[in-house]
Length: 440
Image 1 (cartoon, rainbow, N blue to C red):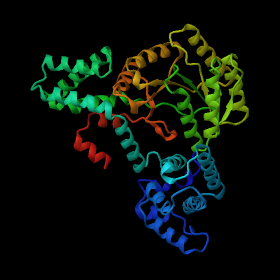
Image 2 (image 1 turned 30 degrees about the vertical axis):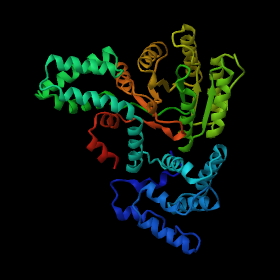
Image 3 (image 1 turned 180 degrees about the horizontal axis):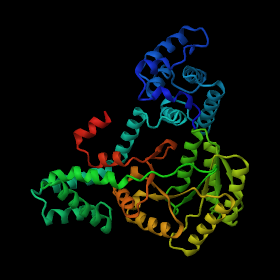
Image 4 (image 1 turned 180 degrees about the vertical axis):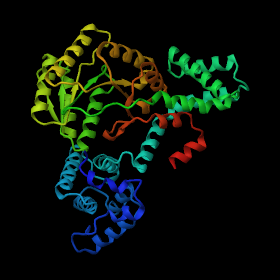
């Protein structure tokens, strides 16, 4: 539950506009001030969107300081936020700015909006979805340019759905890092869709492909409630961005008001423990580690004991990232899972595999080996912003029927975002005019 869940009704799409406007506290201006009165009127009259409200309170604020804290406190008070919760949010953000050495608003505005969206549980709000869509679109530029150009050339170069068309489409998928088996499966699915719908023109296959990609990323509902604390096992080879991904996940949880613990069960590299400790401090999470070379299972055992006794909401357990082909690493992961489950029934509640989109087919082989040896529940795809191999997302979801929970779209803490398969398909295949409409 977020800090300010009591004001979620402001964004309830079923509420009418007058109700949303009236949701702003009648006594928002706690102190009699002309500036406060003016801000109150502007906030009440504004469209009820987080970005609009934030823009109003940040006017004439160019850097962090007393004016910024007063304006933030005013906004939160106007939304009916308890003073204690408001102070906690502001103090946490102050500490982050000091650690990051950010001063000017343009350095931290997007992070501030991101934190507010998480704390207010507003990631599904229209404006936040639009920001995410634009960010994903920018990150997929290289993938889209290469893929769309080839798709367009193929569709315009054929007049009927003959064997040659399907063969060239299969080859295109392989070149887009889908791999041989996923490419063959995808072509067969498209053939079946075309037959069922009576489609005979290549130009109509684009819509079929978009529908098929959306279907590939669609996962069935599952039980998400857990017996607290939730234990999340983080898995992945060295170099995929696992450490920073843990930090970003911990940051999200912290902004949602959760008490977070990070455990360093990768005890074979002292640098890995030190780096994770730095990140834990930066995002405000607690940290547990032992000496270099300690038994990783012992670290996990102590961490889950600490999480249970300390009433933590969530525990992230980092694991070693040595080559996935080594049997001893897989045995180690199995042992950690057993230890966690013995100490806390049901743990680990989720096992997340972090894979690097820039590695293309290597991401597929890593997923295969880790799923077989250690068990994987979800995938996180990093570095999507720096690759032309984004097609691997389709391949890994289709071949292993694993949901992609998050994608890494940059270096900042806010750049780990929930994955949306429908948006991915529209961005990858959308025509220029459609793209402009969606990002407008």
